[in-house]
Amino acid sequence: MKSRIVTVCVKGKPPSDDKDNKEREKILEDVVEDVKIKWKKIDVIVFPGGFFYLGNYIGHLSFEKRVKVLSKTSFHKICKKMCRKLPKNSLIIAGVDSENPKEPKIKGEWGDQLCVAFSRHGIEGIGRKIFPVKNVEDVKGCENNYYVCYSDDFFTDKRIVKLRNGEKIILCACYDMFGVAMPNKKEKNILFIDDKRYRREDGSEFKNIRKSCIEKFNKMIKRKKIASGIVAIHRFTSHGNSSGKVMWQRHGIASCSAALGKFAVGAAHFEELPRYDISTLVSNKVPKNHLSKSGHNRKSHEVLPKDNFILNKVLVRLFEL
Image (cartoon, rainbow, N blue to C red; front, top):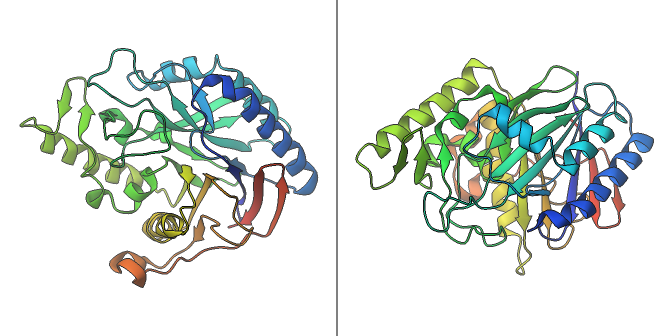
């Protein structure tokens, strides 16, 4: 059975304060209301990275305690409410960024970057970022690579959720999708790991700890037979070209699809919304040999939407994969 996936691309930047959540909740409500009228049998609606903002740092907490904190937010309530308007077992997936930690391990440490799956019952899964980028200009506090990863997040099955049709997907927080595609090549930006005993790159044991985390991540994907991925991407700027979007499509989205075997789907913020048939951020069943190619030899393998509509400052697209 095919998966019917809706992606929501938003004009503008991710919020930098939890006061902005009210506007985001309204966008989500409006999108779901229109989707339920226009399209049937929806499996999941995907929103961008950092779509909501959390005023508490939760990276150091267990999954259960992370859920407890998130469950107290207004956006958790709205997501549950709107899932009830969709078919039973449908999901809403959205990126959530948090405040920087009050007691940082290092000066300038980033807050959490999460990809969260909501159902009518609550939170079904959380993917906390495990593959940082060197710097992120458009994310608050991320001008330098001071992101602490937690070892448990590399192998937890709490970042895996099932769609209505039984398809298992891995939740990716932004650059994690590159890590899913090529984990051993994307480990260089992992500079800090908390494995109950804090490790940093200049520590003697760090490389062994990092290698172990990557190995466990690879084994988890194979053991759970994950064939698809969904990613909440933060933002694309214009800057007169589309190189970032092309890079993401070829080396992030298409490569993830090739690595896992089935589909890879993303939603993002855009400085200017693209046309419905451009920067779709979706690939499906990309050949495995895509991964052995490099640079411009990799095709985009972009999937076009089955339908679409514009609602205020969002582009909503329907894909059948």
